[in-house]
Image (cartoon, rainbow, N blue to C red; front, side):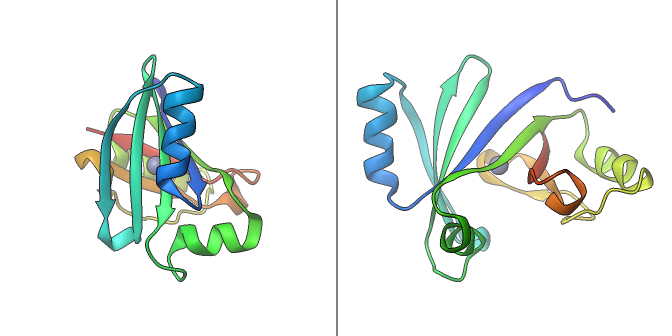
Length: 133
Ligand code: ZN
């Protein structure tokens, strides 16, 4: 397995609208999609920078994963996502190398991508996501 590029960087924010304004008005990026992912209890907004996206994540509930993250650590970078050929085989490959997984199997994420997370305790503190089309 070798990731082809950074697919996106996930950033936990308290207020999606205010943060979108910063990325648009200050950094000059264009928000091309806002999407709610109900089972993750988040609302997401996407910006394209080259071939990498910025994914802003606002919690729709205090007990969701992003709500808990912000309560513990505050706003900021939440995860990094690598584009891989196939999420399921990438997950089983790293699991075979002793990495603890959050998702044993890929599941459906924002933008209809197949996604799976590795546990940050196994990845030196960086919540790591694999994604494929
Ligand atoms: Zn992500």
